[in-house]
Length: 186
Image 1 (tube, helix red, strand yellow):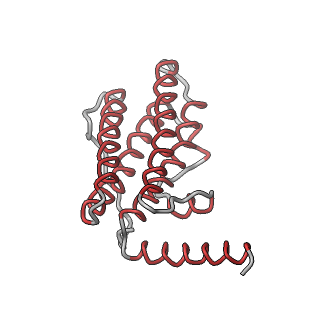
Image 2 (cartoon, one colour):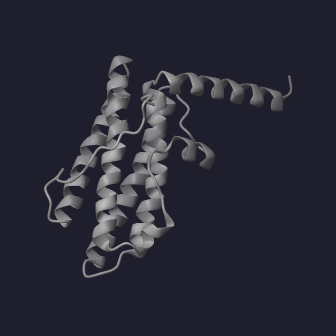
Image 3 (spheres, rainbow, N blue to C red):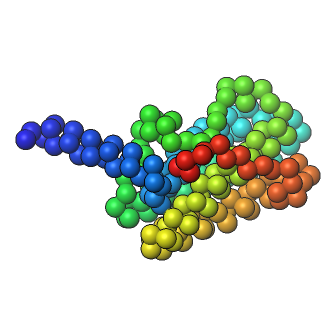
């Protein structure tokens, strides 16, 4: 078997396993959604950084710069944890697009700063749905390192959500809605 054939066989086995894992979710598959969400979130955070306008722009740009730095760190760290767990995190734009549950829109750049902040807070809530599911699955599958990392990530998200909401004059969860349109729980 040639090297190219070996690569193709491994890739086909990966696709088959991913299909199985996404029909009966595993901690690894759910964490793949989180990786994809982090990648898409990076794009949205950059949109916010680049297009914020108004009185709080300088303060918000500093805040969003820190969010971007932490988001990138989480993306790399979670991928490393998954590799440590013998999982294959998504790594192509096509995979990120397939597995993300965050939406994007070029119109985002025209929103008022308060709308951008509110959207960012809602994106953290969406991300948390997958983190919570992955934590439960990791605990069931006896993957304590993955569960611990995801739990830490969840705590960070809670803090950022509270701070974003405070910028809007709201309490931590005021007006935020968990939108779960996934019937198959993947």
